[in-house]
Image 1 (spheres, rainbow over the protein chains, first blue to last red):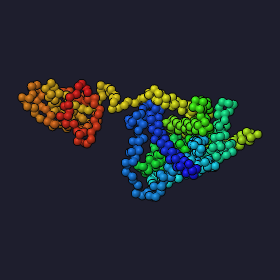
Image 2 (cartoon, one colour):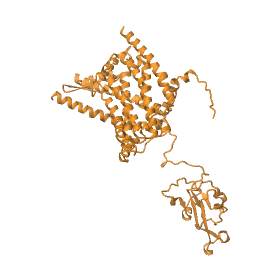
Image 3 (cartoon, chains in turn red, cyan):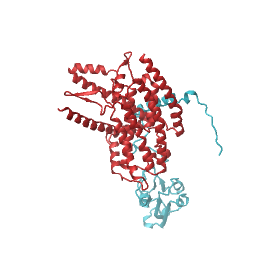
Image 4 (cartoon, rainbow over the protein chains, first blue to last red):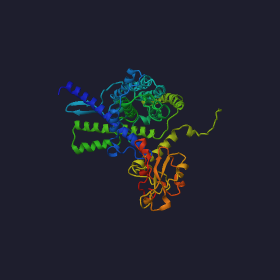
Amino acid sequence: MDPVIFTTLAVVAKMLLLLAVTLGVVPIMVWFERRGAGWFQGRPGPNRVGPFGLLQPLADVIKFFFKEDWTPRNADKFWYWVAPIIALVAPLAAISVIPFGSHIVIGDQVVQMQLADVDAGVIFILAFAGLEVYPVILAGWASNNKYTVLGALRGSAQVVSYEISMGLALLSMLLFYGTFNMNEMVTWQDRSLWGMIPAWGAFFNPFAAMVFWISIFAETNRLPFDLPEGESEIVAGYHLEYGAFKFAAFFMAEYVAMIMAAALMVIVFFGGYGFLPGMQTMLEIATQQFGLGSAGIQNVTALLQFTSIASKVAFVMFVFVWVRWTLPRFRFDQLMDLGWKWLFPLSLVNLVYSAWLTWFMAN
Amino acid sequence: MATKNISRPYTIAQKLYVFYIIKGMLINLRRFFSGLILQRNWTIQYPEERRDYSQRFRGAHFISVDKNKTENCTACFLCETVCPAECIHIVAEERDDDKNPDGVWKEKKPLSFDIDLLRCCFCGFCEEACPKDAIKLSRDYEMSVSNRDDAIFDLAHLKREINGRG
């Protein structure tokens, strides 16, 4: 096949697949969030619709779809409509640079398992993650409601404060790897320390991993930092005036942002799509068993790599749910205390440590 | 109002949050697995499973009847008088002699006997006041109605058959 046509087809297929997988994980995640809440709290959770309640998210979607699409009279119509679109588009765009594996071989063509191999991938993600604060502010302000404005102010203050420590934690790792390219980061981590544990970034710089992990909770407005929503204080925060599918867009955006943040975290700190311990053996067994050629080996490798990153992302997502049903919401001043008085100075110190570590490893 | 300062001496470990957060999360992880694997629930699946309430539970009212399906009520108005919510409305009438084999014991009868469930506070005073053990509270707790008129129990509904306390 003509390489140009093949590449075009491959890119379109990857786009559709990425969209389908990401938006397909959202209902599963919603189901797990609610069912998991039940398990954490000693009750069954939603178990009526479908087997194990698995069709509950579908029922929710149908409900959202058939609800009245209502715009408040005094809202700023344009921004009111634009906010949920930005909320959903920004994390989806950021996901496009995340590598889910090295590459697969079809015929004599090589297909990257990444929508766009951007050299400054981390910067690209940070740019779109930074964009996530805009829908909060736009929705809150355009709805023209005091609760939404309160939620928007809280959200913007929180996201901006935590983006600093998140950026610093990421910066220390960028210094360490010496690259912005995510594939190179994963390649760097794809070896083992003393032949046992994988050489993940989190083992070299655990503090940065912790700061980053805390910050992504604040970035994605998840408990214990869900102050922009704060059901018990400001009703539903910035998306209070949204109903029907516009609310569903915000809802999906939250989960897509979680997936995106979890994937970034896994790539920078937990070895990305690098093999988990034991996967090398599986690959060797598969090679012997089926007598694979070099293309076959590469494809099985890609499959195992995808399994690796998917299971790691799933674990981080589980921690999102786990933390949500364990920790209570922070008070706003406590949140700011933690962000500015603890994480920010400590991550500055950590940056110095990381610089030293880089120098130490280089020599 | 003066501010009250309460000093709580925290240890360093408590001030650092981290250890106690991890401790709490591990406790909750145990809860998660006991829910996921052992399916240990504190709740009941309501329409299928029902809670067995106490014999003294005060639910929907009924009026007991004798062997001839005649209500025991003699329209003495004691329940209407004692009712703190004023939800009982009785209109009394003389009972026909030929329909009254019990003679003097049931000379009067209620022409209508309405209980407004929306007003009732289920205190059970009517049951205690009744000299004939006629009005009683059953253990039936499912009293949802779809309009206000349905919430008013009339005599025909109150005479429904209930075994024991339901």
